[in-house]
Length: 181
Image (cartoon, rainbow, N blue to C red; front, side, top):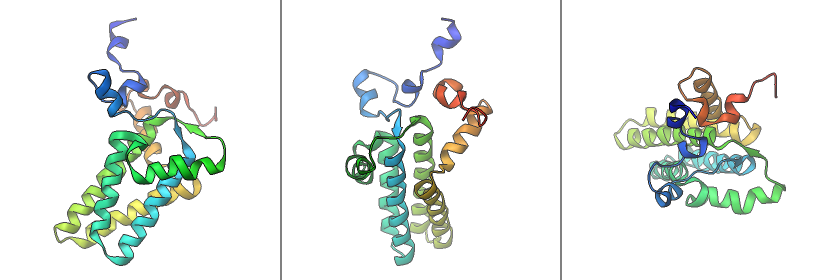
């Protein structure tokens, strides 16, 4: 191996925290991910977000943000919505449909940023800006849940093709081309 490839983390190393084995496992994110579970989790986000918007309850936006942060940091192990999706809802559809984990984790990061920003804006007395971010989150989560279109995954792919995200982060993603399927 060359010195360059020795420094580039493998996909599973990149999506886990650096450091000792136990710490890395604690902050691990699955790779691959069951797409059905991801879609159910997005559906739960849609429902909670719609309830928050209709009721005007900012605390629900905080709850949504906590869910995203938990999924980003720990995968589906701690988030109640993800546990429900992985353990109860997705298995009802049959065998898992596996997709790469790194783009899904990236999408969780975008959701965390949007929901945390929305919550901060709502608490800061800027409700229009906060609720606008939640509506954007509803649109993105609806696309994921209802038709399987993950906007965060698309952004991940664009960033990877432009070299901003190294190909080694998700070799399966880097090898994907619309012509190959």
